Length: 328
Picture (tube, rainbow, N blue to C red):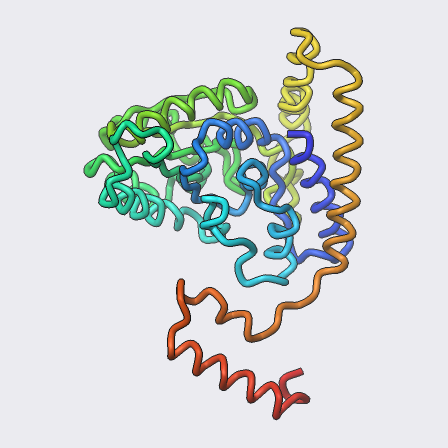
């Protein structure tokens, strides 16, 4: 969690310095994301939003690969098959139908309900309170419920959909909607990393067993603005922000570890040293990033090279070689 926080702080600073086009901060949501990631099995596949930096960290995605997306230095960032972690999705809610379809494919591949814990697979679909109002989100929930798709719908209710409060998204708690889709709904304290891990683990186990989907609502708070192009001070009060800063998930887990003798000063000193090293690597790595070759857009169009794609690549390579000034 501390590494994710440091990464987020560095990315925000880099955007302010003009090194990134935009940044969507996850500060305040580390417990929800890290807890959720540790509640999954290695083979479980995650469909994230654009803010799942903590989940990306847990799944082993290099932070610099995430920053390539926000710098415009990559067409994708990472190979989803390497981490069972899909690419970020900017379109609100669009990843949920994809996740449900992927989960139905898992069913048809016979990877659900076999009893083999190393083989049975669950799918996690991430979204926020604002996305819960999108039509395709409700379509995905309905479809998953009808077909018992092995999906954990993980909603991080961070209180705000840009400037719209959660109270304008739903008159009832979001997890209560689950009953209408024929699945259980669970609300969890999203700032309690251990509680989130336990709830997600139970939901993922249920999905892998073939019992169907679960809607998990993790109640947390977006401590920073929606993105670096937003000014949260225009629509929420300082008192609200301060009340949630008192519930900071990092301070909370540190207090728990100290109270239970789970960690000592030496441990936290080592964490700070490691986070400093990460910060330096992130700053250096972003400034050393090069623009992608134009032909790299063809690299992952298909799982295997397609003749049409090969011909398009060859045409572009020829044009770049013969028209260097125009290509520039």
